[in-house]
Image: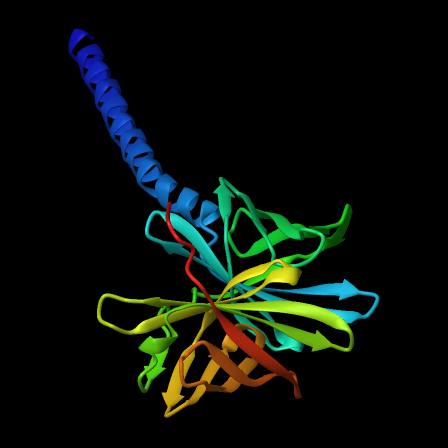
Length: 259
C-alpha cells in the first residue's frame, strides 16, 4: 500500500509540473502577442478615406497619416475640389484618440477614435460651433511624400518673400510666396493664402527661363506664371486654378532691418 501511495503522489506531482509548464507557455505567448495587438489598435498610420455629407453635396476626404521622425504628420486630399497633399499640422494621437486642425475659416478640426482592429476611425468634423459626422476607413499604407520642390533654371534670385493680391469678383485675397535657399543652393517654396488662414502650402515645382517664371502648387491645383522685372523686385503674371485665371502681381517684400 505504501508503494502504491507513493506512486500516486509522484503522478500527481508530475501532472502539476506539466500543467504549470503549459500555463507558463500560454502566459509567455500572451505577453509576446499583447504588444503587437496593442500596436495594431493604437497606430493610425495609413491612408484613410471618408465621405462628408453636406447640403451642397458629398465631399471625399483622404488623410495620409504617418510618422515624421518622432512626430505625427498628415496630408489631406479633397477629391472633388482638386486638393491634393495639403499638409496638416499639430497632429495629436493619444491612445485611440486622434485630432488635428484643418485649414479654413471657422477653425475647422477633426476629432476621431481608432477602432480596436485599427481599420476604422469614428469621428466628426467640427467647425464654427457645429459638428458633422466624418467616419474614415483604412485604405492602404501611408503614401510617400515629396518634401522638396523641383527646381528648373536659375531660380535662386527668387529667394525671399513675395506678396500680391487677387481680385476675385471684388473679394481681395492676399497671397504670399516664401522662398528659402537650401544648403545645396536649391530653392524650396511655400504659399500662404493670408485671408483664408491657409499657410505653408508646398510649391512643387519652381522654374525660370530667362525672365519667365512658373510655380505649381499641387495641393490646390494652382499655377502661377509671370515675368520677372529687370531688378528682380516684381513679377507680373497670372494665377490659374480650377479652370479659371486672374491677374496677379507679386512684389518682393523688403527684409526687415534688425535693430
